[in-house]
Image (cartoon, rainbow, N blue to C red; front, side, top):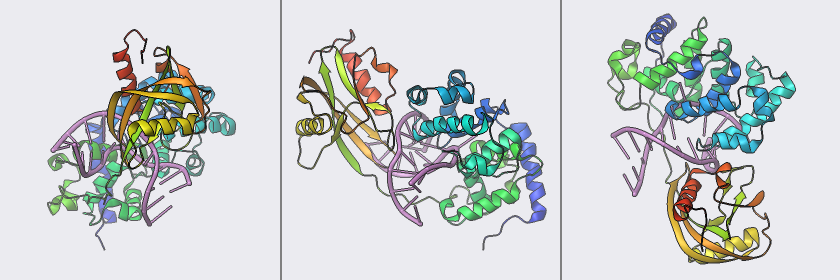
Length: 367
DNA sequence: AATACGTGGGG
DNA sequence: TCCCCAAGTAT
């Protein structure tokens, strides 16, 4: 059994963290408010995403969708366009859907109980605790990446955090200062983000230094223990930029799953022993039921997702005939190079658009 | 319980 | 180039 801080130590840990936070805590945009809507948006954006990346998206989002009613009545495409580039697009779809639930079920007023907040799509235990403690100062704990690292070091956890989830949650709950839940949680995250960092933690500046088991055993560089990871599979994808006069064919991916609801250039996986040209011809016939002629290579893009890597091999193609059918997507459109930026695209596809604009600065493509 | 789900930055 | 991972959730 791992030794945890004793109850008598808890008060001291709470006081020292709060004192540190009040002096050294970060000044972040979402800390200027107690508006549960704004705090909710920030919490969703911050899932698996660094603060530095989130800040400009957060500021822009609140200008476009200043309140839950505005978000609820917006088009999903407009919501995805605001989210474009942030990744994990289910977060945007869930935010939109949850906004509609809030308007319908709560007249737009954010609920204040854990059960009600957890029932909203995209909100799990950490996000719920983060919102309710930050917005209403409710005494609910969190366990995000920062807190996992801080607590793993505090008790010198001898296994990867994912294998000790229950224990870390218990510790987060036991430590929470019930008189200052908002500041305590924010302080715990700030400690992880600025002092108890993954690499080269500055233990000399840490308010918990003398209580930290990792520091006492000089294990802070080894903890938390790494999670085991599987090697990433690699796929080669043939992609078609189908040109018909001034227009290019794009399709909207199905609403669920990878990059759901975003637009893309059509294509698919290159099978073993298949040439890129044959793959593109086959995919376009299978998914759109039109005839094309595969032309020159435009660009090749390597891109890494969380669970696999892809190489997109993009060819310019000439439209020959047939009425495009949405057999594997939700919608098809012919757009000009000028119109294309209105549509939300995944990051790898924006590189294709950039290559097209470079090839045809006047917007006229010749294939 | 294990896997799907984006992107950018650091070493 | 490659690996790791960052304010996690859903299934």
